[in-house]
Length: 495
Image 1 (spheres, rainbow, N blue to C red):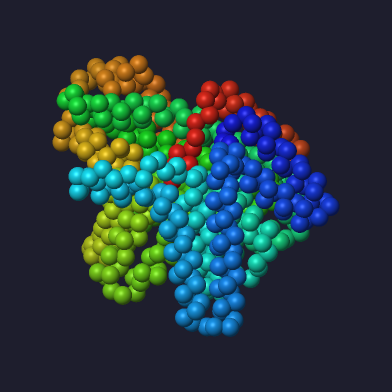
Image 2: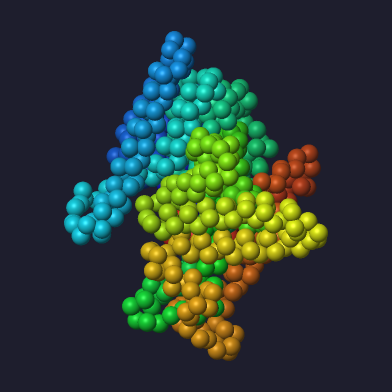
């Protein structure tokens, strides 16, 4: 079930919300149980066969968590660590089987010239997210940070439908206290209003922006792929148009999903952690990763980079840890070498960024006006991010290199000025280049100049302001629903 479907907006969400607060008046346990069952239904709506997998993962991880907690009381040290290692290994093996088995087999086949096969393995939706969420719970339990072990609350913590499919990645300590708090089970109209505003803004990002940009990005990337066999190279203009279209598509798609998830959760009085903070406004790659997919960045830092040693074992080890973390972060996104290379690119970016700050910026460029450094850093960061998105989007590395070479004029088909002016893009077939510009320019202005959704606050106490906000929500909802057409899945569903 998709957030941007009629069945979710007009049936599932209202029913779940109303029944939750009705049952919560009788018993908080009934309300929590209903929300957990509704979340399982939401997940099973895609493929009921994988509900058993999800529940099995939850029961096993909860049991391991209990064993680790008890071992911490009775057997300090080795026993506790052994249970943690076994539990994390079981999670990674499950994730590895469904997500990476065919990837490694295909890679081995291409090297050895063999034709091994295990048949088609269907990737369960959200497996990366609910696996990482539970690994964090296990590590927090091992560190003694977990204080509550109510199974219904744990079930709800993992399955809570706003975040289950595509995040944010949650920490146990962020969610369990909220499920135990009495105020969660009383309707709060300010939260409902703010949640509806966030949900509608996210819906507009998805339907009006991401889905409008998708055909252009697909046309140019597919055209470049076709051109590899026909010898027709993309122009510089076409390559940059496709790269920018995808850069904005993935931003509005994932940011839109996150806004919708945060808005839905807030209607139930649950606050999910922020996942975006205007990442394309970043003036360095270091800052970019503090703004983009913030919960994944936090997970990689806390559960991979720091355990590897972080920056505590010298500079060479620090850069090695950065590369290892980003390579694995890239692989987390999908079973393809393009994701690995994308992660490696960002690892190199981060290493260069840290070296630049230590070797040049702080010692020799302190006299440069701050605004000049921020402007130059912002432009360079954005170009680097766009180039990396090309690798992320491409089907393989030769495909990515065709577009990257065209972007930077290394190998591109020449284009006349009047062709640019009239939008006669060869690779866009029937799509208008002028229509693409009408999306790219305001889209870039949106992500660079407008405040992000994290700054939205519901203003109460004024009937006029309340009515104006309600009118704004209804207007955005009308235009978004009017553009539905087909219910396209969110990009991060595949990760």
